[in-house]
Length: 188
Image (cartoon, rainbow, N blue to C red; front, side, top):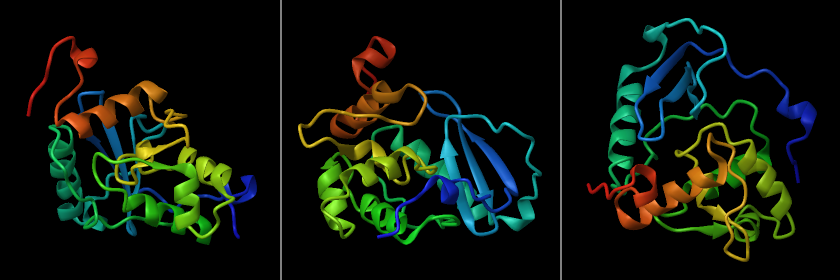
C-alpha cells in the first residue's frame, strides 16, 4: 500500500495558471487551476500572485465550478463529477481514497474505517484520516462527510475546523444553513 509520506507530500505541484475567487456564506473560496484541471479549492487566499493565464484553463470548467458552488451553498444536492481534477502528486492509495470519497452521497456520512475498507485496506483508518487532512480540493472531494466510528466529528482542515464541518453537514441534511451561522434560518 502506498501511503503519502512527508517526502511525497512535499513534491511540487503542477504550476498554477489561474486562481479564482468564489463567494460563499463562510467567506471567499479560492480555486486554483492548472492545465490538468482543478488543483485546489479552499478558503485560503493565494499566498503568491498566480499568473492569470485564462486561455490555458477552459472557462467552462471555472464557470461550472462557480455554478456548482452557488447551488451547493443554497442546499441543493449537486454532483461534482464533471469537473476535471488535477491529480498531480496523488499516490495510488490517495487516488483510491479520494475516488471513494467522491462517491459519498450528498447529506450522508461514512467512517474513516469504512472508507479505508473501500480503498482496499480496512486497517488503514489513520492513513485515510491523514489523506482527508491533506485533501486540497475541499467540498469537491467531500472529506467533511468522513467521521469517526463513534459518529463524532473529527478534524477538518478548512478554516473553522470542526465547526465548518458541522455547518456543511447540517446544510446538506437540512437543505438550508443552520441557525447558528447567521442567528436565523436561511432557506433555499
